[in-house]
Picture 1 (cartoon, rainbow, N blue to C red):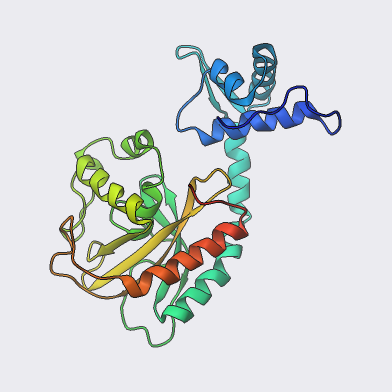
Picture 2: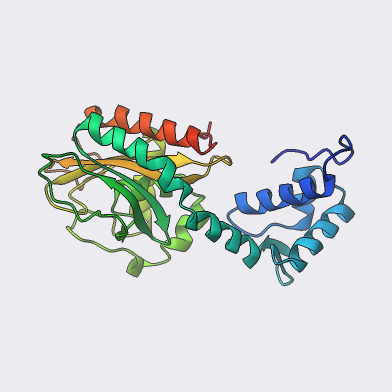
Length: 272
């Protein structure tokens, strides 16, 4: 249950607004459209109130009704608000000092990336002086999310249906060095390992002779919104196998500390 809005809650500042925002948050937290009945149940609202709120949100462009499915989803208005938020670059501004400290502490290149469709988009990169490994993960670069440690750490926190939508067929998978997942079952197996560990790694999947460790940054709904990673010169002979023997212990803790710092800075929370 997402949490009751307490329909008979205390009088005061705009109860209808609070309920409308609660509906928007619920729609945003679900991987697919939701029925009005489910919204009413999860938020503790009367059905009549729920339909009134959805009708008003739809009129303003923040929700959309799908008659054939009898469900409701986010409208283009919500997308425009989200796009405006991203244009203001709060994640970059808050993440830059975190990435700078991580790069200095680890003596390695650190990144902040987000998911852009089925690709990882890099927002911030810090490379300490003297770092020898040459990387393609520059700011503004997009790389296949299923190959990068940052992308894998975000994908591991998404609902399975959303992952399937991003990678619907064999043609959705890109292979740079022969070490990446070739199909959806292979990807799901790797994501399962990431969820168990709490961090992702790749070795030679993007650049031969380079390895990365990353973990996801979570928003207030405990959904992955970004990922922080470290890349170093490294190579394992069995890096492409599901049970690689490579050790990344020295990189894991600094990454997890950076992720915890940025998650806290944006008001997020790690899933239980």
